[in-house]
Structure formats: C-alpha cells, structure tokens
Length: 284
Length: 244
Ligand SMILES: Nc1ncnc2c1ncn2[C@@H]1O[C@H](COP(=O)(O)OP(=O)(O)OP(=O)(O)O)[C@@H](O)[C@H]1O
Ligand SMILES: [Mg+2]
View 1: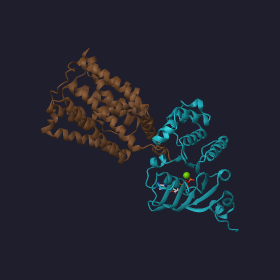
View 2: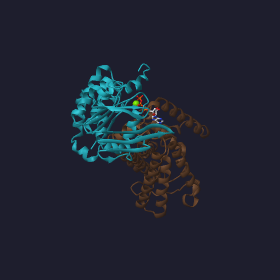
View 3: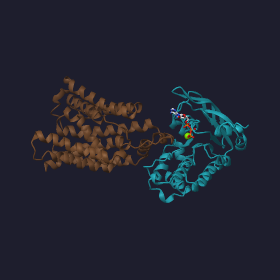
View 4: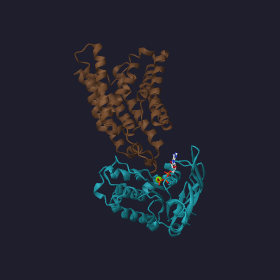
C-alpha cells in the first residue's frame, strides 16, 4: 500500500514538470535541456529560505522569484542562440548551477544535501501527500490542456512547424517563447514544492543530468507535444522505474540493468518519433 | 501617396550584391507583377519587404511610415500579408487551426472588429469550398487547395498588401483558374497585390503594371503590353538576338 501511495506522490510531483517541459520541448520544439538546472536553483532557493526563516510563505516567494528569473535567463538564451547552441548551453547552465550548489558548502552543505525539511501541517503522512498529489495532477492536466488548446498553444505550434510562416502572420516569437519558458518554470516550481517536503531531504544527486534524460524520455515516449501522451508515459515510466527496484537482483547489478533498460526505451522512443522530434524545415 | 514605396533598396550578403538600387511605388488597389529569370532576386525582394532580410541600404515605406527597422511580425501587424512559394500552411494543424492562428495574431482591435472568430473561420472555409474539411490536417490538402486556403485566410485577416510568390506553382492546371479568380477577388476587395509569376500570359491577364528584375536590378517597368513588346525582355529571357 505504501509503495502504491509512494508512486502516486511521485507521479504528482513529476507531472507539473513534465507537462511544462512538454510544452517547451515537445510542442515548441525548443531544444531545452535545462529544466533540471531550473529545478536545482528553484529547489535550493525554496529550501534555504525555508530553513533560515521557517516561513513557508517567504520560501514560496523566494522559489517563485528564483524560478521566474532563471526561466527568463533560459528564454533569453534561446532567443539569442541557434537551436543546437542553445541545447548545449542549456546543459552547461544546468551543470554550472549544480557545481555551485555542490561547492557552496556554507549555504548548501554541498554533497551532503539539506536534511530535516519541515512539512506543512496539513501534509504530515504519505496519505496526505498522495491526496495532494492527486489534486495537483488533476488541476495540472486540466490547466495544461487549456493552455494547449489556447491561441498561445497554436502560436507555439505554428512557430515550431515553420518560424517564418508563423512570423509572417504577425506572431511574436519573443513573447510566445518567453511565456512557454515561464509556464515550464512554474511547473518545475510546483514539483519542488511537493517533492522536497515529501522527501524531507534536499539532495544534489536528485538534480543530476541522468534525471534530465529521464524527462526527455518521458516526453519523447509520450509523443512530443501531446498532453495525454506525456501524462500516460509519466505514469507508466515512473511505475516501471520504481518497480525495477524490487527486481531480485543485487544492488551492483540493478543500477546498470536499470540504465540499460531506460537507455533502450529512450532509443526506441526517439527512433519512432524522429519525424515529430526533428521536423524538416522546408525552404522558402 | 503610394501604399508601398521602395527607394534605392540594396542587399549585400557575404560581399554578393543580391539587390541593388531597387526603387518603385505600388499604389493602393494596384496589382503589380514582378517577373525575372530564376535567381534574379524576386523572392529575396519579398524577404526584404516582409522583414526577414535586413536591407543594406535604402528605405521601405508602407502607407507613408518607414518600416525597414520593424520585425517581420510587426510588419505583418501593419497589414503586409505574405503568401509563400512553398505554401505557408501549417501541415500538422487542422484547416480550422490554420485560419484561427492567423486571425488570433492580429492586433487586438482588429481581432475584436472581426467579431466571432469561429464564424470568420467557417466563412473562410466556405469561400474555398472546404467547409467539410475543417477538422482535417492541412497536410492532406492538394497544392491548389493549400494555395487557395492561404490566400483566403490572408484576405479574411484583413491584410492590405499581398505579397504572392508564384501562386500558381505547385498548383494543378485544373485549379490555376480558381487561383486566378481569387486574386481578382483581392482586387475587387480593393487590396493591393505584388505578385511574382513566371507565367507571362497569366501576369498580363491580371496585372496593371509589370516590374522586370534581372540580376538584382529593376530593368524594365510598364504596362503588361509595353513590357511584352520590349526587346529587353526577350534579351533577358532568351539572351541577345544576334540577328538584330
Ligand atoms: N540568404 C542568402 N544568402 C546568400 N545568397 C542568397 C540568400 N538569399 C538569396 N540569395 C541569392 O540571391 C539570388 C536571388 O535569389 P532569389 O531566390 O531571390 O531568386 P528568385 O528571383 O526568387 O528566383 P526563382 O525564380 O528561382 O524563385 C540567388 O542567387 C540566391 O542564391
Ligand atoms: Mg523565388
């Protein structure tokens, strides 16, 4: 039962991030590999403020400010660099943020992470978190579906399919892409908001690049841009990832097996989705 | 005052002079044909007018306002509607979405003046005989249908200046007539049209004036009859005739 509740909480904490990321990477076809970088900065701002002031409101405020600023930074980079350069840069920003967190010992306790994160009163048991996760999931899917079907969603899709054709209609790429990054950032913030008090531990290992690869895999497997696809693949792949832990294998074998399994899934997903991932840009 | 005025436009890319000293005016309500051999710079001139390439010199005014420093989307919002040589239709979107996305990109007031966008979408589909196909992906349309849809959507979005790049290219002979009809409809709606075409009889049948481009320069300008008669045109297209 606890395992089941644990999966539900995990799904609830992943969905806002995945659905936001799916908007940028899946629908907008922007080669953004930095959500984990956004997440690490947001998570640390949130928790450091929470531990030092003891106030959830201040911590939320600080997390929101951090996520907005870092999302704007990524948006600015994406509008100024070409696709490939931005892809590499987004990874660089993530790894730099992680390096700062690992080395700024006085503030972050480095590789030890920050333990004993307080939980808000109404979230004291795993069951409480599961209920919160279900509510958050439903609300997130509902809102993201609305966004997806809105004029903003259409403009994002048009820009992804053919930038010149979209601009010639009067679509403002700067405005649309900045908004996409901000929405993605808010999703990442919501994920941290639940995930960290649930674990009661903020650990830098949770923000490694491998986690980013997992995000990409979920979006690609779920059909880039599709809200229902991303939701379904979040549920299935998370359940699979957690279930593998119970395979009758020794810990030293389990790690590599899991990596190979997910490597294989990613390979197959990218292979089948290659046309939707990297559409041909037709000439003028 | 002309609707569009080009003065001494030039464009240099990597030391190649692609356009030089291009000057001509387009009066409101006119249909102007732009012709010239392959690679003479016709599409490039459209790219400069619509803002995708920045001119190296000269000026572009639209309704008296200098627009050379505006972005493509700002120019679109001021009434420039472009129809692309390779179809500006989004193939992964439905026909309805294709029309809607153009209407939603209009400046706020203009969008309000259109009233119920759903009705405008239905009207646009009706105009090109695709009322039943609204929910279909645009990628399933024929070249002719895409072209009609693109022109109709630009018309319904209330653009004033149309830049049509080879509207009959990729269109079956059967539908070329329909494309010609919708272009004439633009004229009867008081729209101003700049049209690139290789088909001279087609150009002669719909244009008020023809501008001939060769290696990035305007070499000839006049009524279709004048241009057809001129021996420069023959030289450009067939090379100098040694017998004359
Ligand atoms: N961005 C660019 N960089 C370098 N050269 C360019 C660029 N755009 C256009 N050119 C060159 O400018 C010239 C004019 O090209 P353009 O496409 O405008 O010709 P066109 O008159 O439209 O020809 P066609 O009838 O074949 O469509 C060509 O030689 C082309 O190679
Ligand atoms: Mg051309």
